[in-house]
Amino acid sequence: MTIYIDAGMGAAGDMLTAALVEVLGNKEETVRELNHLGIPGISFHSEKSEKLGIVGTRMVVTYNGKEEGIDGEVIHHGHGHGHEHDHPGHGSDHHHHGHSSLHDIEHIVSSHIHVDEAVKKDIMAVYRMIAEAESHVHGKTVDEIHFHEVGMMDAIADITAVCYLFSKLNPDKVVVSPIHVGSGTVTCAHGIMPVPAPATAYLLQGCPIYSSEIKGELCTPTGAALLKYFATEFGEMPIMKVSSIGYGMGKKDFERPNAVRIMAGEEEGKKDVITALECNVDDMTSEELGFAMERLMEEGALEIFATTVVMKKSRPGFLLSVLTDEDKKEKMISLIFSLTSTIGIRETRHSRYVLERKTEEVETRYGIVKKKISHGYGIKKEKFEYDDLATIARKEHLSIREVRESL
Image 1 (tube, one colour):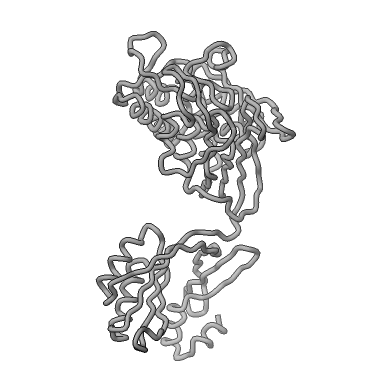
Image 2: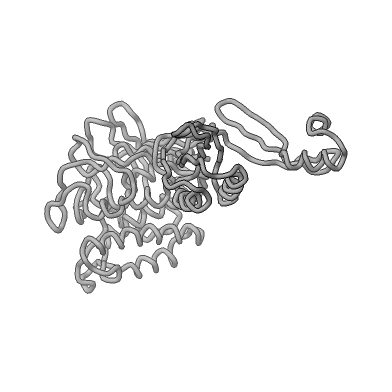
């Protein structure tokens, strides 16, 4: 399963929870499960919400019967979605009543919340991301950061719910759109801050984000941490057959529907980005070039080919093309310089559409033979592994074609 999260109106923990509840279906049962997770003082309640003609779910999270931002428990700042619970950091004296440390949070998660150990690890990993962001912003160590009780419990509720629901869905991949952070300023305990808030900006380093004319804080620290933690990649929606859609609504109204949209389904083929490295050589033998190509393939190049070209002074030569994943690019560049005579390499990036691929083992009259199966875009292709066919052909004194036709 692939999950695509449309963060075109940012994200907050309660909105992600609501959207995931809708994606899972059987909303009442799922909310009942959330209420049985044992989060101290926390209660979940879902309600229908409509934004500019789109109907979705708003998740009402209460702590000891109060919803933050509704019952006067405004802690740090309200953000664009109308909640004030998503900015838990506080640099107050730890003796002050109602404040807790990261160790206190770890105790609550490990001792009270009824989820698998893997989910508990996810919860604490997300909360540590927020604590590290707060510590960076306030110039304190993580151990010195303390969290206001109400904001802390509400954030624990959001993080626990999202981690638990992701564990139920168990997706193979989570793609997140570029994140809309909003614009303008926001008022918090420390004064007027720019949007995105400093902790949110810190958390979203390395992620594609953007602003627009919409005034307000659209992405909260908790929303930012959850998106960054669960995203396997950021980008456009992949080509997929969507089986379920969820809308998680915020409270505040804008000129656009204030919602996080999550789609779940199966990908039909996929699109990725690869790097092409090219160089011209005219002073290498064919054997030397062949050796270089073999070594580059052994080291993980996606594809290599050499094209005969006529170079300056009418000298015959080769254009060597190496296709590679971005994370192997530097390694490939170093190998090309060391294995060939070139002194310059050109780089281009290409979007690539590819079919999903898998290998199966097929029982045949000759024994087990591997078969490559590719599918996507409404197409399915099957092909027996050449090396297996060649082994059988040598053993049986047959041609490759005869072996293939007899399988």
